[in-house]
Amino acid sequence: MMLCLLILLPVIFSIFTFSFAKSNNGAKSMALISTIVTLAVSAYVSAANYTAPMVFDCEWIPLMGTRFSLLADGMSSMLCLLTGIVMMVVMIAQINKEVEKPNSFYGFLLLSQAGLMGVFLASDALLFYVFWELALIPVYFLCSQWGGEKRIAVTFKFFVYTFVGSLMMLAGLLYLGSQSQVPSYAWKDIVHVGASLPADTQQWVFWLLFIAFAIKMPVFPFHTWQPDTYEQSPTPVTIVLSALMVKMGLFAVLRWLLPVVPQGVEYWSETVVILSVIGIVYASCLAIVQTDIKRLIAYSSIAHMGLMCAVAFSHNSIGMHGIMVQMFNHGINITGMWLIVSMIENRWGTRDMTKLGGMAITAPAMAVALVVISLANIALPLTNGFVGEFMLFNGLFAGTIANHMTLMVIAGLGVILGAIYTLNMIQKTAYGEATTMVVAKDLSVNEYLGLAIIICIILVLGFYPKPLLDLTSGIAMMIGV
Image (tube, rainbow, N blue to C red; front, side, top):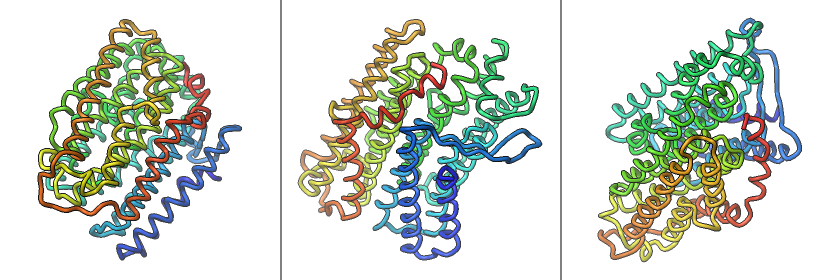
């Protein structure tokens, strides 16, 4: 029942938030309590996974052969823990912020959390699809109602991309479920049926599933919705999108693609790796020329996810383990980056780096946080990003696809380009002479707390990553590598 609580708690609290928490403080308090309790449950589930995976299974729609089946193995429990941490930090950072219609705003955020938990836990294909949509629908309303000036056009583009991808995924899952002698959408049955399909069938089923997952990550050339959506979304929604929802796509690749159509994966792996590597260099080059910090971070996220996607199709167990570690670490780091950007925009009224500078003088604590989190984001040794990225490049180096050495070298350019645009952003934002007359306040108490949680995780996992490595060990074998 603990797995059900991970989904039910945000849903129940969202109902109370929608119905009763009309004031800003009441809605924020309700959302914060929900995220703290949900984090406690996800921490318990993660701790329990050091001994054995947790399972919940009951009848759901017997006529269709689908069950309400949940599984928390190392990968699922790690992503649920990440979701719990990120959502709690978001709510802490929002304590001193005001929003219109707070009950709806925080209610939708909690519903998206419930959908995310369901995606990471579902071990039935149709249940997975239901939660996939449940996670996306609240974000659509959040972007369209609380976004920036261009929110309508941007949200429409986001909706079209995700809707088309979702329909393709649904078609693929329904086809796989229909191929069984007895209708069943259980993960084990889907894997068995998919792997037994002819090679040419697996090749087109691969694209039905992969395009949906590639849009969500996003991978080049399915990425064009991402920078505009991140730019126009309010900061809490941007964090949910970039720290958590992109992991839905990568998680789905690992759980619902690689083991399901292995011959299709083998046939198209080199194509996907090439697209991912192109995306790494392309996004990194675009990040270098940005002056808007939010767009810079958006493109850097595409580069990071491109590396993880490339390694996922390199067929190497160390690289696969590195993906799981890096999914957690990237979620933590990118959350910290977005929080800093929000604080900069709130105090200086701009995200344009050409109009910033001197933060180290006017807000030294914020400048320190910016430096630490930014360096973790480019995988500096002794930060949490280093171990995962080292494992990723090791996996790409030892991969079995053609031209893997050349592709690894090209992907390595992303590390160099990442250092360039990150250090340039730090220099222009935190140091030099102030280019505005604004004298900004340093971090407030809740901002200190939110960033302290992020920085503690960065440093602890940088010095001692063993707990995260142990939690996710053994999953690579389970998913067919």
